[in-house]
Length: 90
Image (cartoon, rainbow, N blue to C red; front, side):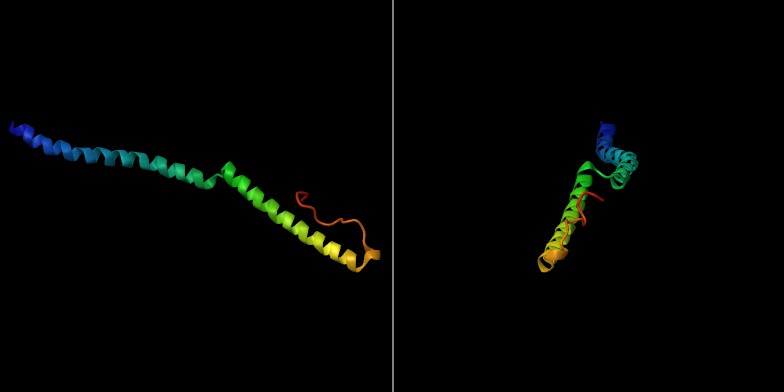
């Protein structure tokens, strides 16, 4: 009976050791997974970056077209078809 009373607290404290050991074993795999996540680009991230690039290109095209139209209004005799920057045609 004495032995059982002595082993009971020992068994309760060993539970924490098991979870700590499991954490130590899993740590390298978790670190490797994070490294892969940081070095690769997800599809969502790629789509977001492409959308940002296209919005900037379209803004640039809009600005150049407005400038071209303004110059055409000022000098209608020199006006030709727009042949400037077009978004998506890099």
